[in-house]
Amino acid sequence: MDSTWLVLSALALGLVIGVGFMILLYTAARRGEHVRGVTTPSVPDGVEQVLDALENAGVVVDPSGNVVKGSPGAFALGLIQGGRLVHKELSDLATVVRDTGEPISTEFELSKGRFGDASRLLVVRGAPLGTRYILLIAQDHTESRRLDEVRRDFIANISHELKTPIGAVSVLAEALEPAADDPAQVRKFAARLSAEASRLAKITGEIIDLSRLQAADALHQPELLEVDRIIVAAADQNRVAAEATGVELAIGGDTGAKVYGDEALLVVAVHNLISNAIAYSPPSGRVGIGVKRAGGIVEITITDQGIGIPEEERDRIFERFYRVDQARSRHTGGTGLGLSIVKHTVLNHGGDVRVWSVVGSGSSFTIRLPEADENTGPRVSAAGAVAAKEER
Image (cartoon, rainbow, N blue to C red; front, top):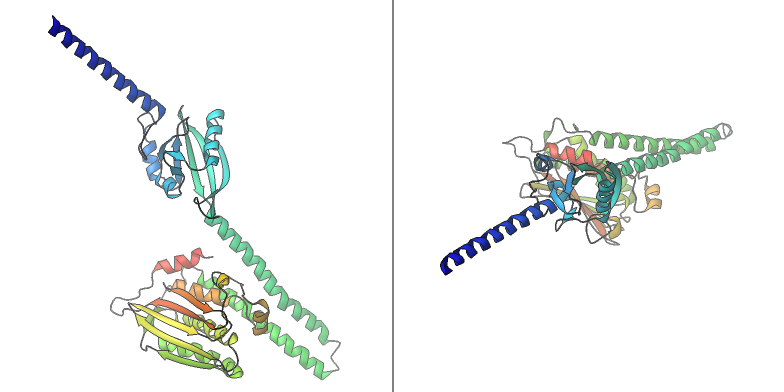
């Protein structure tokens, strides 16, 4: 009797434990408890597959605000941490959707991380998913906004830059007629007209060059080029300006380097760097132009002994129309587009450009390009053109 009672008691206890365990599992499933990236069985069929394939950030949350499922994009943007939404704004949106049962679209500017002031612009749409869950889809518009700002700044800058020479030409043209009987004044006004016309032509030409560089097919037929020839051509274009101020141009380094690309574009890029070096060098200074080959990379470095560039300005010097010293740039005839042309030229050739500078001691600009492998053909890839296009 006692043994029978013990067996029955054990069976009853096992049954109670089993039923209790099943209740716990059911409760957990109903509450949406989960591990990262794993969907509970009660989420509508196909949601997990859709989120995994989603390019944008997608998140499914339950009524308690727990993240049931997040797409790879949501984790990449840092929207989820510890099974919860990181940003209160997103949690509040999910709550509103839950309470109203209506889809809602809105725009948020959210911090990129816990540290620093950097932020990203997200356009988020929330909608009910079934009867229990809320789906949030977020699109990152940060880059689109940046490009819009760049375009607006470009239009504003170009309007300003063109207005000055156009206005000067107009004023000088009006002054010529009253001075018709004074040959000296006519010659003076004519010389100034010629200078302003040249400046206007230079700005227009550089804008055209920059537009060409930002086209996807800027290097549709790259050719095998001799770097020595490019440097000699660029230096020759600057010899008159160098001699006028007594600046010495010194060419040295490795010879025989070859790259694939567009010779005219590369000559313009090197010319712009040499021209800047001369313009910002003291009289009787020295500008060095060196070539170095190492590890499949060709480096063209232009070094001056000029005024240098403050550290806080170095990240901006490649922007269109940006000038470190506005007054000096006006005096030297700079348009503010030269370094931007250099940057886009190098990007189109699959390389990069670097700057080193010490205020009061001088600057060095280095163009780095892939060295040509004559046995395998051009090494310039579409990546360079794409990178340049994205900088627009």
